[in-house]
Length: 296
Image 1 (cartoon, rainbow, N blue to C red):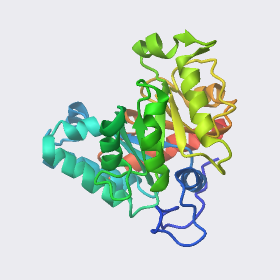
Image 2: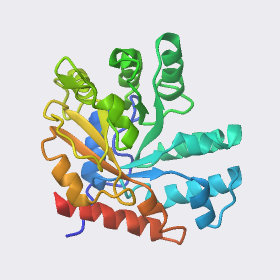
Image 3: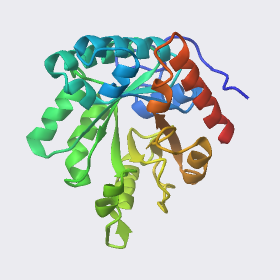
């Protein structure tokens, strides 16, 4: 049965100072509302050279702008979250970053939330600088949430997490990624648990008592079988790997059955390769979203 969209067209939730009274200002609440309204799907905006060529676009800032504009026109207001991959904008230099900045600004005026995939992680004043760039109230590249890497220690992210919380934004912390190399670090055990489980547990501590969801999510690949305890997350799990990377809706339902929180499966190529024809990307996204709903 196709997903029936609930809720009106305007922005679902808002950053502090932007929304109406009674609308959730915290990221976890806004994400819950967006998924309730548009279904459990995050679509990655990954304009790599091959995809630009498939769309008949030039591999330069002009082609990048046309690609990003089409993605927003096709998907904003139809899926819960759009996830631009920063690297594919950065490779075009300052003009590419300017396209990313305009893309994020445009999404702020739509009901769809933005998740910027930057995987930043550092210590001290350097991490403060990243927080200012992506998570502060006036962050020039501010998204509703960003991805962070905890492998200088989870505590190194606390200042960024506080900045995100103060501005109504969220973070997704890498825990168990789907790339084969990830296991070397993420499956290493210490003090009776894997590094991945330690990252999940630390996220759960930051989310304790939050309702309906905490602002600290974790990243766990949808293509990876795991024995992770997700009962204490009380937040969202970003699960990349849906579609072209091999995970199907049934895999997502099985692998995250024990989650206390929300799973947000992410797909990119399987949706974007349907374009650029009018309505094609939207139709691909809605079909995948409906399959996810049907599998739960």
